[in-house]
Image 1 (tube, rainbow, N blue to C red):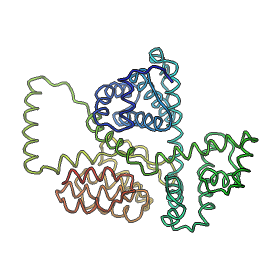
Image 2 (image 1 turned 90 degrees about the vertical axis):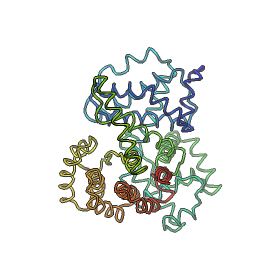
Image 3 (image 1 turned 60 degrees about the horizontal axis):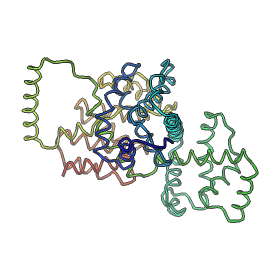
Length: 431
């Protein structure tokens, strides 16, 4: 770690950790444009730029929650991290950027460079774990989410998952087996045996009888390979917990980043406009805003603030959508995206992701009745997207100006839902 960080720069780390709005605003004001320009120059688009910037900030947040992190100069640290994340993303797409780091390395200390790589490595592992977690059956996802939540007793987990307490270890081990088969194949590492996996899970959860615990600890001291496997298992568990378990601090930070996305990352950058036209346009815009606010003080502006989403589909065969549909949707070309999604749904009517994103696209086109048909189907049939569908059903009524119906759908979303914090923010805006 760098021994003497700049106090002002260290405030950025603290601001992320404690989701301080003024600090987050300052980060976007100082650094967002530069990173957006870099991504656009290196084969990316606006959505890519927003996504990479948010990933970098969340990676810093997650890493600093687990490890002491001090940086001597935050700007080049963040720049290099964004570039390294984008480099890996392009590699996944079969592209490369030669000489990506050269211009930045001279401004960073050796410790900072190592920290960038550590933050990056942990972030990639978290994303990998979450990727394979999404491919698990719904019952496994639910079981692991509750099992990784701090403070949950076995009886609580049994009640939430409808699995008898005596069955929990075996069922959890089976879920972990499926998850780690894919992860260990990806990492090219040896997997734990069935018995060792069960013992490791019980050992880490503190559910092993004292005599067995002592025996397992003795094995760990004598078996280097087993020790490495247990450490990797524990690390993946902790990284996955950061993504899937309830965390109001994480949700608050993600909401702040979400609200800044619409401000700093738009699909079309404004072209240069002569000053007199700019002044006229600004005046007309102000008048229009005043009229809108007079007629409807909450409906239009709040809808746009909360409606933005992008298509992010798990890369597994049962849920895969055509890449051109994803690109069209994320660029706001909803008519063309809907045509492709129609074909996907005709071929596979149970594809909940296709139904969900078609519903969102239909809201953007103001075809609200058709949108609700899709979103209601998702709400009733998909565990993964149930509360996202409820949120967009609420937004469909918000767009019409039906405040009560909007609130009724928002209140269907429980505290444990991933989007619960955003829901509460919208409810506050509607009051």
